[in-house]
Image (cartoon, rainbow, N blue to C red; front, side, top):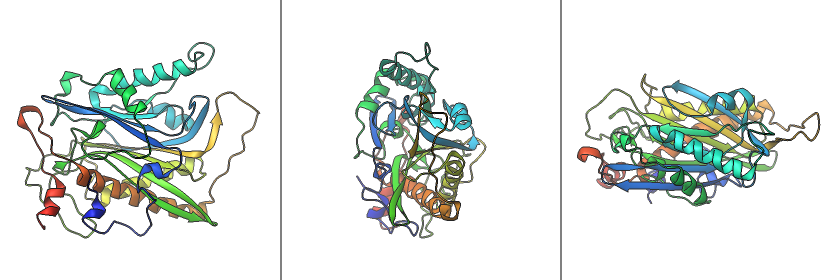
Length: 341
């Protein structure tokens, strides 16, 4: 699997973590279910924020909608309450409902009181439209596929044309799943911020690499109708307000690459911290929250920008060839590099 650093110096000033992936944040795992056959090229990608029962021990979370052309599930309550209580699933636009069903079913099996003695569940699913390279009307994603993606989660995972990224396009090239991370050193402690992207955005010809080169995908330039879902994870203790501000800076990483968040592009960032867990069942009337002093938050802003930018580049470089509906295909950025451009 190729990544951007196999071809060029990585973007930014900060150091990546050991894997240079979202799984550098302790406890975070990622799994895929890839569905390919005939005109269908799609799938599900699962981000498991932490092991254990997320409904009983929720995570502090935030959402930033850069451009709201999208059909994701769970964003309204997540933004209102600042809590994440399920894994995050990514899929195609018409697969959202099946993924919601899978998250609800799994949570109920662990918590039989959901919706009866206790509250209901806010399932979180992000989507991008892979209809160019996949027959989206086939409704290929099933609840079993979503469960399989969650069951496959681990610290090492594939990128590119896998899982939810199987049929995605980015800047006229084959897009998909990508990830990267940055280390943040504060008061002698090393923390991490990791990004995972579902990259399906950007007009052909608009991509700008960190060294200033502009690869030509030799595809006709079309209106910006793609999308990108960015998932940020950190083990830095931050509150919801800080986390949303950090999520907002992922947009800077997307913009550095040449995107302008077009009218038809759904550009959404989800973020969570593995610090500051919130119990579902009140153990006391007050919660002790540890948070980063704002005088150091610029380090997190830069980390979000750099990790997002490199995650998109990794998605492009790791992508492999896919022949889609009616023979549609997209060139590979890795081939452009190999050609000595």
